[in-house]
Image (cartoon, rainbow, N blue to C red; front, side, top):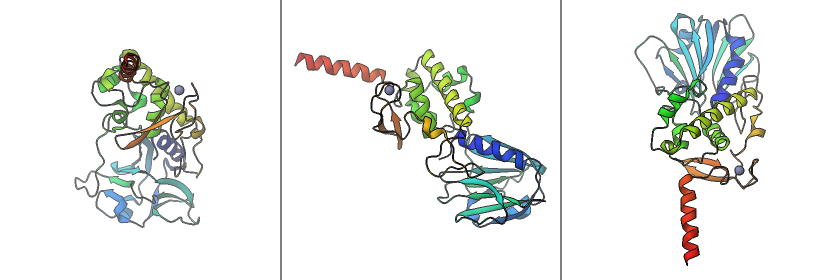
Length: 289
Ligand SMILES: [Zn+2]
């Protein structure tokens, strides 16, 4: 699933081509992926200029003239590509938007349809799935804010995945950041001291920035708007590496399921404080028997 670095890559690559472009013909193949303003999308978008393309959390946002916004959520398998109008259309392409005065168009494709397109206008009416509330952007988080976020008894991994708490992190970059900071995914958020909190925030930011530099990670479906794969996968230290040696200490990477999601971690580099206590207790008991 595309996370912050992938979506940032897409927004940055779309921006030069789409900023100041005027939208013309709009072809919708599946209505059920369109949410927001209920008026037919083609009539609503045609003739609008794209003022800005940017990212918020895992969403690509296009600010359009007249105060409208077109928001794309890529879900699990969504892609946004810029292509020639005459290029062959892949299966599962649900939306095509032509750019006036060019032979180019924007295509939204999403085989599994967990993603969608939201057209937001000043119309109070709203159809379809709502876009949920979002927490702050991790790259803009200050340490004071982050420490306030950590004042919860939840384990750190599901807390980082919660988009209403911090917006943009998913499974890959939360696992990578926790490994870089030496924090076990099941550590209670409020048990991290000031140093650990600062280290974790630093690792989250550096992991995300580095992944953006390499256009994100392609595990399966993610592609940039030009159709290229992200190249950060070769730098992954834990994600998807169960049974492989930790690049730091050579211990075997483990996988556990946390809040229904696979979590990859190094049992040596990411020890749980409480577990260490347990191990010591077990060892003492063994010695006694
Ligand atoms: Zn390790």
